[in-house]
Image (cartoon, rainbow, N blue to C red):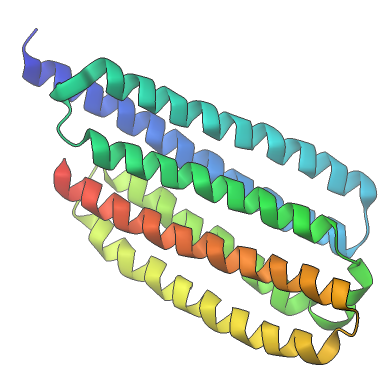
Length: 216
């Protein structure tokens, strides 16, 4: 078999795995929105159920990232864009870690404080997690259809990232005014800061997808 055919096979396989990884992380973000509602309503059973489900998805994402690494190692120098591919896969893995971290912080917070003062704003930020990860998923899909379209999607990811930065600043100011307990203030600030960091990582992943699209 010609090296060109081997590279084409490796490309199809690794991009399929990468697309599955982005699908998993989109599902993870959808679960955190449901878990956020459970936390606000103080539904302990729901919190536990979705926490367990999110742990399973996070493990699956790690396994997919390892699978991509193995495929790249097996292909060797035939895959000229292997570094860009691995970098992108690792960014996705890191995003899942941020989502789990945010979920943990939310579950440690007093639901009453959120419900009274921040329910709409916090739900809005969590919904934006889904929006940005949907764009990331679309970028992974276009790699196998029309790679040049990833550049257009990059501007949409950047717009969401800028909106999250603005909402983070607004909520920080509001929290300083509304939350009197130092412990609750720290937990809340950690939560919204984690969302901001996660979306920043999505921006890095988006840039990495753009570079990958240019490489393949």
